[in-house]
Image (cartoon, rainbow, N blue to C red; front, side, top):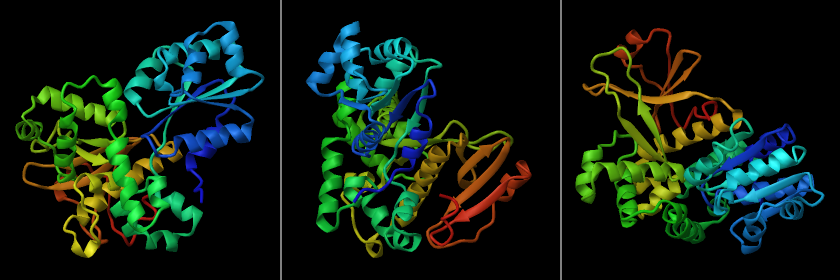
Length: 372
């Protein structure tokens, strides 16, 4: 069974418009399946850049090599392009020499591919992120009622395609396999880490603190690692799509917490695998954390699909008033609180007085459809 990805239509609609299309995402989220399908439908060429033959062709960028790469095709897909040295410059050469040829390049290592393409492809590219399956994609494939019935499964095992499409014990084994064998691959390859074992320790600490501000000093003390190294590792984990973060919102109130961050996992299954907890909901005490992680990531997926470019934050004061998630759009603030069971609640009075005209809503399992 193949679930159609929303990004597919976005990419197809942007073909042959004079831009290189760069698709980023974690390993095993479905990038290869997505771009291969587009290449097949459009009659294009597909290259896995981690294979020796592809690397051989792309190692020399003379006329003969470029012609062999392109052939008579109008579309060329370079999958896991970060595996090719100086790939940004090489894509630029192909793009400038053959402007009629559409290039799609994917990468699971944003810090490697972005750094190698940002300068050569300035003004020549469009960036897209592919995440694990979204609730909306599942609902579109089946229907809302059936997808809703699988909500607990999504929060326990996540939405990696190869995990979600399995059942029972196979789900658990697949997400553990991804966590063990693929999660750090690009960080270890490109990050030049002196203490890679610290990655797992950091992630386990984050797994128990979803929805909470992260203290760099606390992580530093518990891992016996300096704060500078902790920050670097967190940055690498974000750039390889293991985690994502929200910054704190602070403008008007003296007691607002500023310069703080909350971290979320790109997939809840990864989080649960790290702490080895796939228990059913009746045996869990972390449903609120899982729900908040789910809602934040589903909103990120929605924004990416709809190309909504928003500023996203959380809000908290030193006297413990808080809002889980805020979007700023055209100068207006939209505030959301995530509660698994409850659909009602009042916005903190301090926030509404400090930011008049803002909207506030509680997102629960009963009313989340519009939000995502």
